[in-house]
Image 1 (cartoon, rainbow, N blue to C red):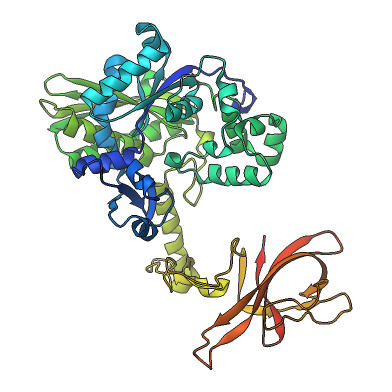
Image 2 (image 1 turned 180 degrees about the vertical axis):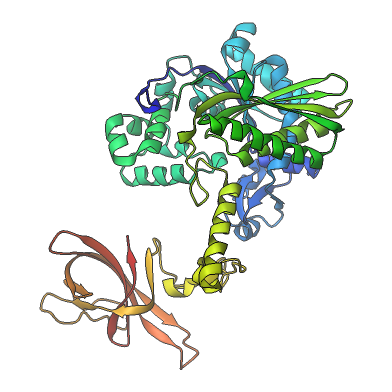
Length: 531
């Protein structure tokens, strides 16, 4: 039976979450005092910031320069997954001392079946309190605990420090915003696009999305949206254990000499990860819960389970093994080097769930996908020449044409103008999907068939009635603008004065099309077309 046809009863789950973990880890490594504002950036974009930085106006998604302008004393650190995982090991170890059988979802978040700790400490409240105190004493960091049915709901409960009784998860999720489906730490582009679409459709809460029949969701949005719909309804994406992995699927490597350095651990992780993935692929399987076991020369046994939302690629397996070994070697105070390493696929799914594409995206490791794409692009350049593969780079500017620069694949992707500079008169969002290098002539007519004129104050003289582009006539049903264009007024030869207008037209067959028009020199032209 396909997973989409199954109804799964979620397991009551306890989640331990360390807020702003990338910032906490970076600040701890740099010995930064907690009262100073800090942020972690990736590709010059803020991916995490401390509470002190948020109080100063810094927000996730800000450009680095904008964040530093908002808070000049902001301490900025580069994003480092290895650092996050290494420094999280003491936290995971502290949780495991009170709640054996934990699973690391990602650095900053661990989960465990709630039955054990709740039963041992007699209540969920007592278990949560003991865990928070124990982590603070033994790991020196703050944590929040949440309980709910399933991983997704338990994580959201931990964000709020709430305990949701069994069977009440859907009631807890219903009023939460639809944006909760797109967790920033997961960086899933497909989920971000789905959330944006649901918002535009008027589905603002998880409850509103859950109320849509699953059949309609599958028909309209596809499989990925059905899985998100299940989360919104308080169900599991997939069964907790879809099949029991055969013992021979595990892979082991004896290390001689034993490894006690991080660089050696990275090399060992890569080879073992490729062996595990190849063995699973031969049976049509992929791993979603990875068990990592290490044995030292002195007989110390180490074990950790990593839970993954999507099936792991070879690079994804290698990353988690490397992170875990890094944490053990640097934080676990081992008395000797690791001489045996074993990987166990704790949970597997059909390999059809691992659908690798050319471009990085959900369900695949971005590093591996980017490498595959790069090889394909270089091959095309070898056949057709370096200018055959161009990458668009968005920079600063006012009009859509001047903002885009096409760069040959492999060259530095530097914008022609700094996008972080102020650009008064810049075209408002959204931007056109198709931009013409040279604006195409178009006719914008009023009800009498005369040309629509724009005054020197950027005002329409009459209402636009028809637009004629490419020999096709469309009735104008809506428009926005015009916006004045007055560029390079100091340069008589290159100065441009005119106005831009967004127009929505409907053809006789009902097809709608939106255009970005510009009027300059007494004529209308199309600069871009919206999808």
